[in-house]
Length: 353
Ligand SMILES: [Zn+2]
Picture 1 (tube, rainbow, N blue to C red):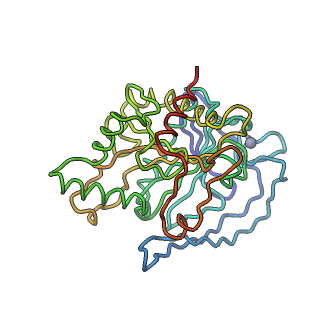
Picture 2: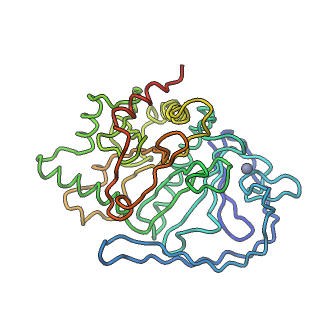
Picture 3: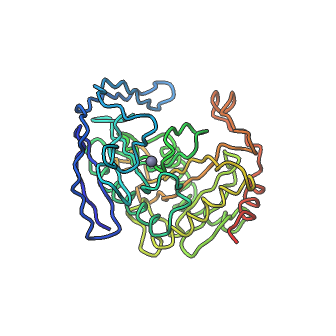
């Protein structure tokens, strides 16, 4: 992999990740962009103890690409996009309209391929591996920023999830705090460690799931299962079998096997609801150990966390979405209409032949 960092016309960083080590990336952003001015503020809810990012941007938006021009496709002639070069493998750049910025963290966009009409599931194993390497590198780089405590790589796929750009891409949020879901997991891990005299909760969960009926897919180094208490109609958790705290700690064997396992999972997701259905909308979310101090979690350290990916769809049946209504939005109590065992069965049936 070759990495080339450059700056866009408004000062934002853009990084090319190339499969070829001799790739040359010297194209210049020729758009007349004003420097980005971003104000983003993190407010803590005193009752719930969670944090809200309030983003009010005052940007001089002098440059508006025509609506039919995808800003994530490579630039071609006079069609100038966010990517100055006329081709790319994987590219990452700072979001022009970030939810988190400055002292409040950083938001980045990851373009998985220059092919506008592809989806992640269409990538080759080599391309998916390059995305994994880009995620890993971004995690490392962002973790070194003084304001950053946690790095979250994710993909929202599908208009039903609010994705406005069809081009295959994901995002990375670098938060200035440990997120509430991660904090909950760390508290559970700490409580379990104390109650059992040192057992790791992630290991215990993985052992139970591996022996159960909800395994969807198992490789030599990765296992995917529908969790016992899945929140969403179709939800799969993908873990490396050897517990590591983050993407940086994955060994070469796990990195090599990841593309095959993950691409198969995504392809099965597209088949859940049968042939002829529009592509399944999904959210794919990497959970990594935070980089900040963990004092508040007492006996827990970074190595107690288990890197994993949570993949779920908000579609519950053909043409119907699962809405976060009263119980979910009002009280954080999920009602799941699809038994996890049935979901796992369906996801095994959808295997590639
Ligand atoms: Zn595009």
